[in-house]
Image (cartoon, rainbow, N blue to C red):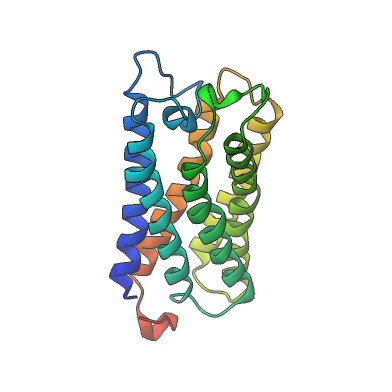
Length: 214
């Protein structure tokens, strides 16, 4: 893929995700982006859940898979960088598809009482996302630092991953708090900001200096 195609796959992927998350809340008069999970807006019994999932989150995840695997080819060769982009492709891109195909129960069953198979898959996939995506971002940052390439983006990646882990720890320590929605959106927003910055870095690459592949 060309640099522009990689750039737009990342931008389109995160844009679809954000738009779907915002529109999902508009289905309800009392939906709170502060206290409710994004998944609650496309749970099994929501009015426009299927539309949000299959026209918003599923194509978003597919675009993010495409972005991650094509972005890998734009960076210098490194095992850490490769592991990082594979992690993002699988645990953010593919995981976004999986949690959409397997939505949570009504209200996302926060107490986890008699959960459906769909709820179990949804929760397990979400947990893996929050473990491996920050780790993948950090791996890319460490790989770039080791190669002494893109120092600013390398530092940003490491700090972004650590920042995510802090807020994931806060979220998991009390998943039934009144601020779960806000905490989740801070974490997801950090992932999105990282992808956007990575996409713009790729678009601005100069092949001779950075030894990238078009």
